[in-house]
Amino acid sequence: MNTHSVDRPLVLAVAGVSFGWGSAGKLDSVLRALRGLCVVPPRVVGLSTDLGRPLLAGSGIDRWYEVKGTDTARIAEIVHAEGIRAGLCVLDGPTAKSLEAAGVPAVFLDSLPFLWSEGDLAWLPLEAAAYCAQRSPRMGEESRAVVESAKRLRWVDAVVPPIGPARRTVDGPPEAAVRTGERDSPRTPGRPRQALVSLGGMQAPGLPEWRTYPRAVIPAVLRALADCEAGAVRVAGNLTPDLIDELAAHVPEGLTVEFGPLVHDDFVAAMDRCDLLLTSPGLTTLLEASTYGVPTVTLPPQNVSQIFNARFHQEATGSDTRLAWPAQVFDEEAVIEARRQGEAAAHGVVHDGMARASRHLAPLQDELRSRVVTAVRRAGDADVDWRGLATVMGTEGAAQVAEEILAAVGQSGA
Image 1 (cartoon, rainbow, N blue to C red):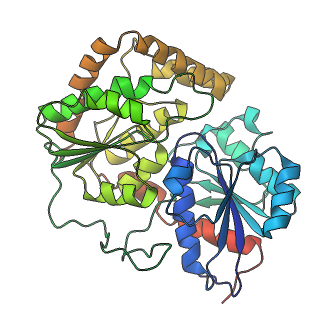
Image 2 (cartoon, rainbow, N blue to C red):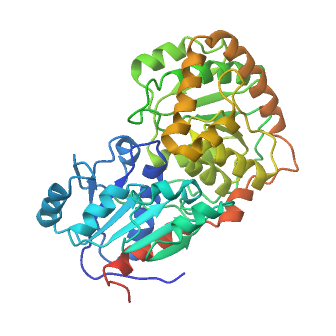
């Protein structure tokens, strides 16, 4: 890996799409890599990223601005006021375009390049200073043609936190725990002493009713973990206090459960400690779990990209722990077929299915409970390569994107 350094502060604008928490996790990983390459730590200014802000609480964002990515005039004002010299946008095409219009070189990180069609050409910032497309296990020809039309394309590895010595926190000393991806004791996924349940960021704009997913899935998962004699369970995700109270009423007797969101660094630490991860199949979480070799059950998907993510994970790891929705909720192939008419059409099929699910929660929970028990027991299969997805995609993406940021402002060199 090439190393670059700067001898004066870099003021960097960052933004992540407000759909799920994957963009926030990737922003955090890239910022950590960037700080490791800079003699003088960069000053970071956040734009929008409303949903991801809780996850970035420990990421050293100096100031946040409420601004729409399409508000080019306001972004230009912020650029001038803050002295911004570069931008990093994760799946936020409009903000990347507005930064470029303001004279700021923007690095666009595309973590879902396999998802695009010609209908997305106008939204994607194909003229950005750098278009970093995260490698994908599979890509259709149409998606590849769209991404390869980017003016300055670079394919990068998976953007995940590094494995190695203790990582230095924003405020000072290294963390006490050294995360190496190696454990003192073997994991016991079939009867987990510690289980981590991850829902990601569910309150994305435009979702008609995000609460149906946790209401259907969490009671089923907790009952299944009790059936498998699990020890402690942590449920992570941006659950509201009232919903946590509602879900806590479903905790089986004898099972110790803690609810609440975790900032990115704490989430990675909890994942590293756990015996089993049960997660809605966001790609960032699956890549992080694969980097650390964590046995994983992929819960039913929340959107069209998660259908592909779960299938990538299953294929790369050789696991049999992927859970789809029962047919009465929605058929995955119907969602994929609808994607031909655009992402909104695919999500319409998902949302209609979740609306049906909300009317039949009790029988749905019973069916999911049985499926989760089977998947948890399969997670102990010795033939599974839990690092397989990270092996296929590589793990140096955060450093590669950080290098592109420095190169974009002409600050490469010792």
